[in-house]
Image (cartoon, rainbow, N blue to C red; front, side, top):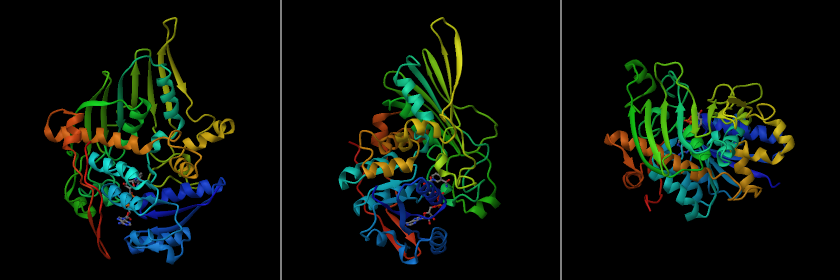
Length: 426
Ligand SMILES: NC(=O)c1ccc[n+]([C@@H]2O[C@H](COP(=O)([O-])OP(=O)(O)OC[C@H]3O[C@@H](n4cnc5c(N)ncnc54)[C@H](O)[C@@H]3O)[C@@H](O)[C@H]2O)c1
């Protein structure tokens, strides 16, 4: 195994989860080394270097300087939503494979630009979607493909927090989450991508026909908190929608960051012969993201994804089976003893490194850029529909989506200009 020499761009909260996963993988024998990092906030950059033992000469204020090196194998982009396309395309243009954080972008148009950049620059790309790299998703996908649920006719994609607007009710999260030109959108583009991507993936990527959505930002705010956290304008705190796919499949979508309610249920899939309920979908990065004895960076405690299978047997009796999605224990250790190769499918980052090492191919890896782009397509449809006050078709989403990714960014050392293609709907 050739050593993987990694560079990180953006040393904020999520970069520490990348580092935790890297440290945990190293303990399991994977040859990974973080050789450089870039961050525009000087004290954050310095602290990152000190925490992970990266020499001062390998720390960069301007990531473009870092990309001039010739000893980097891949770059991990940990900046905020509306900079993903800007920075990730710059990384690929400079000749590096790129692993970018979620959401793929803050609009479908920008997700498409980033997707197309793979081909344009001949570089590999992955997008973080932890909910699709675990046994819960794999088992559900296999069951549906094998017809265990019969004809699947409806899915529900759900996420809920009683009061959890990152950067507002949770001030230790980045202010960028609630900044209209950087975070751009609320829960649907934040936690919602984990639920939507999981549903689309297990359903075999159905083709969207139309969607009717409503987004609101009516949950209470307070002028003192606005001032303290620098909130200038609202991003959504609730998105609801109903989507229709080719063949008649429907999906209702509900995603909030804050609502005065305790429980609103989980995602599920309904078929003629069976239903599947998804409990504790992984939106925290899985077992590898847990530092020794600690909590997951930004994610609280490790969730234990489960499936409940409701069905009817040949004698017409109804059954309700709880499926163990950890296969042995929460880390999937038992499954790994039987099938060691499945480790590559249980973690975003390990899948990415395995793909670069050549242990996975375009055919055998999970195509996260495609899944993330289709997730952005549906999410954008919800927002567009909400803005127009009517349903939108797939063709309209393609036609109306606009590139909003930042083409200029003010930094302490001057303005960075980002040069990436215009959106082509094709
Ligand atoms: N925080 C979480 O728990 C979490 C979880 C999963 C995914 N994410 C995603 O990760 C992304 C980052 O979130 P975060 O919470 O780490 O935000 P953050 O604000 O803590 O970190 C982003 C960092 O990027 C830096 N940055 C901005 N422009 C830069 C540039 N041009 N060059 C170098 N550095 C630059 C910022 O200064 C900041 O330190 C978001 O898109 C978010 O959706 C976050």
